[in-house]
Length: 121
Length: 107
Image 1: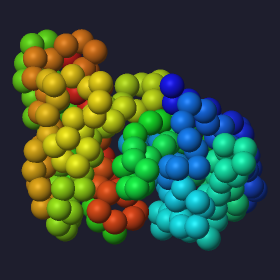
Image 2 (image 1 turned 90 degrees about the horizontal axis):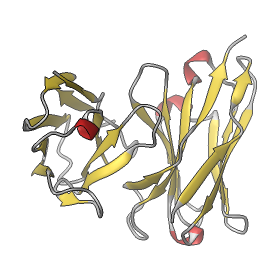
Image 3 (image 1 turned 120 degrees about the horizontal axis):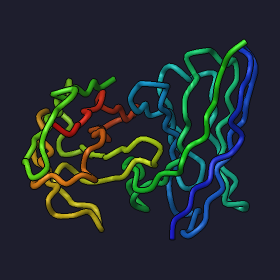
């Protein structure tokens, strides 16, 4: 079955960088778009970014543009989120997620369990 | 960006009840609307996509309707496992914004 396992979370100081990874299995990674979604403590879900199956197209929410970069390594079945210039408001559980369909990548069909990122001095 | 507004933000109901949650988009999104269920400590779960299509494996007591700017999620015959937070999300254009969530609690 579909498995999405995030890693790389932890405590980081404001202004520093962190790179999240998501290792996937149970489906053909090279055929699906992938997302990152986050949830700050006590808050709702916030969509962060999406990348197309081939890595050629990416979109992100305004609050992370210029700071976060979504990427993928299709040879290693792995999704990444490079987070630079981190701010306290980036503190959240970060979920890796898989698109529902092969053609339409916007809808999220499966989610990982999440990894916690805490930005604090 | 498209803003998504859910109502109510919280809802108390009893086992066996039927409840409806509403989601409104700040502009027309056709039927590009999904509903998710999220229990604390668990991964969110897709319930409904394209406004009214039931995701595989999801019980038929969940149903969605609407198009344009106004959408609803209805849950019939509530069971203890249904008490969770529910989110709508638009996938009409990025950023694919979520509603603020509706916390469904046991009365």
